[in-house]
Image (cartoon, rainbow, N blue to C red):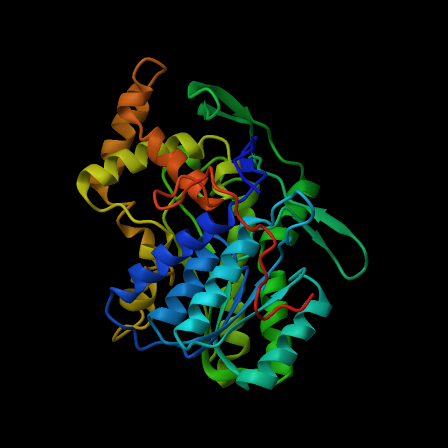
Length: 395
């Protein structure tokens, strides 16, 4: 069938199999062009099918030479409905990795569930013995707990409502938006979904099953950003969850000190992902950031971020941490000259100059490419096969 993008809100409801494969191939080719990293060799990536999770898996494989198991939660094609982008990404990654002689298998299901933890651990024990790195890169809107409770995360402020500029990406019109204040229950629910509780449950389950090696490392991803985003991110409901994630990293390090298992938070750059596209104010900031960093020549996508994280900050001669003990591949974004330039534009941008001062085209390119569209190598008028199999997943 011929597959075209259908955008609804901040997501695209279709995905292009060949475009997703090309996107993965481009990331793989980038990683092949870089120096190798003396890093982990048996890696579990939880949330492995898009964005930073997918890039982490590609980096682990092609930079470190690792065997990887990815946990995903995606849908395969059904009737006239294509599969999700994450499904196509995973199928493409496994195919390419296998062709290049790398072990790569995936498990599809709810990573919060006990069942998926048990399936994953069984596969690790069977094929790898133990993992020496666990990447926790989940970005879920909801969590179904073992007792049947459903927790839903919210993107709201804490303390007081917050008003600032935002952009309607359908019309490219700038307006003001007010982010409402979260209730205590909403904050608690957001922490349950986006915080570190499940991350730690994974590490505990792996340790109890003797499926994680001594001296292993485990990472979770976070974001800090500029002051204009702090009220609805760093200091908002999602920020409270990320703070919980930060303290969980310390708990993991302390509680598994006898095995020298280290938990780290990596603060990554703002990029167009399925998560960031949903956050008010952030898309306008990203569009301006792209403009500034591309002009300065230091713009990076997910794959460049993950290469620098692994090669320069985590697996180099020493682990490079900030004063709070965090990995900071966002360092280029947060340089004074970059932030000063972004804020200068932020204060003057309006509907008359938005196309001149922000990289809206770059934002949209990244958005569509997440779903396999706008890839220069692909003919989107051509009939394609949509029912693609993931080699390691049996129907």
